Length: 223
Length: 358
Image (cartoon, rainbow over all chains, first blue to last red; front, side, top):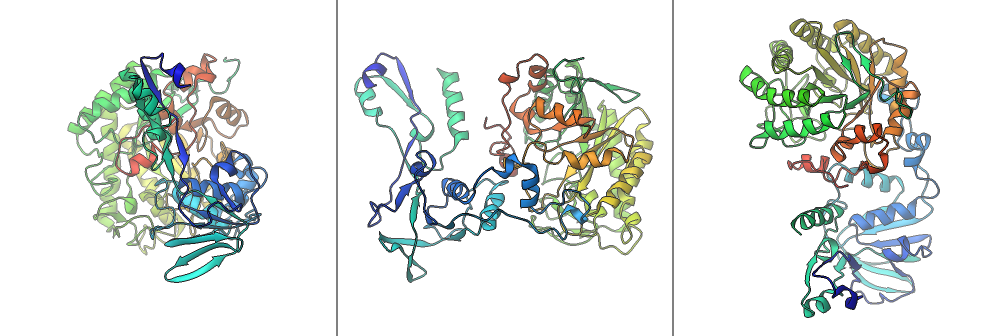
């Protein structure tokens, strides 16, 4: 790859990120999966799940593992039922007296973060509330201020507000941020090829397609 | 007749004017309005959409007075000096073969400033400020300000106005028992609570004459407790028709509703059945909206008889040329709105200029 790239005058590395593996004792335990394992490699996820990291990816993974079958976004009748909307619009406001019917989650899920801030505070301003309500409807437990102590056959050991407890879970999914994937950078720079980084390869924090597209467009215009 | 989208490209004859197709670019605040040289920027933005084939454009909300503005120094129209500046916008749209209506938006208790007014002094769950209850004189003045804004819109050569009567803004706050706890002639019984919107429309019609579009955006499903029921929505729709409304647009849910209405998780055209239900009740053309993002979705909604026009807002931010591309069979080139809100609404609510992710 590197040899081929050396032929070019300038190279843009949009090579994205690698998931960050947090330094927790027992992180190599077979119960532990990364979000890539779950979303991309479709590895099997147990019935009781702890998700480490409640950023955008943690939320997406939680949504993914708590639904089965067709998404309600593809089925109007199911969507209206899920949100308690009267499909005849005879109820006052279209909702009064209608109980939402949410398809129950096939799994028990706990979504955790280290920070003390509100879970999901960094999500989109106009859409974050929808994700929080959706997960609550699926009975996902959300807890903040968590210190991760270790992982073993008994599950995930945590300390919260001074109390230690063991979460008896089958699977632990890591959504604990990412690192820039810049494996090619050093070789290219050593070969004197002018190299640009964009997107996750440039900054892995708050991974954001919007920023990546903007960087790509601007860089394209300059070159 | 267009062979693939016969309904979408059928002109809509309003008697005194004709809209060239059934697409409406829905009102959306972009944040350009408040920038330096904002009028020039917004004129260029709308002109590009007019060139792209949109039938009728509705501007972002413009307040009829200071109390109704979205936030301090947001757009308002209260005098001819401001109206003259708007001529740059209308001229640019007309030169490019489009038509444009100015939306009159009074936010009521939804504004982001401490001098809010509403029918009653109850704070909304999504605003930090508690509103002042309007006095009777204040109500009369506000109605006059709506009529004045419409007159100024006509002065600025707009083709019409849209009166924002939905999404939980001031007019909606008068209509719903949730927010109107008045005991005078503007509150109590339903007929009292709808006097405010009806009086506004009558006074606007009187001010602008017969050959001027008045769109009323009617909340057809509030999605909050203590909203209107269907019977009441129909009564108001019929009265609005009598009061001189040209086109009735659909409002889905108040901003404070805890039900998604425009996000990615909402099915395409998920609420057009609400508009369909109104079809047999009034004879003026109806506009439907929410999560209509591509020409085939729009065509099937029109073919199904749900409405006479379709409103799209974010899809025209994503692709100003959507309509032309549909007409020319270049649908595969359309930059499709995925409803993520990341660079449009999330930006606007953080007081940044709207853009598009896709």
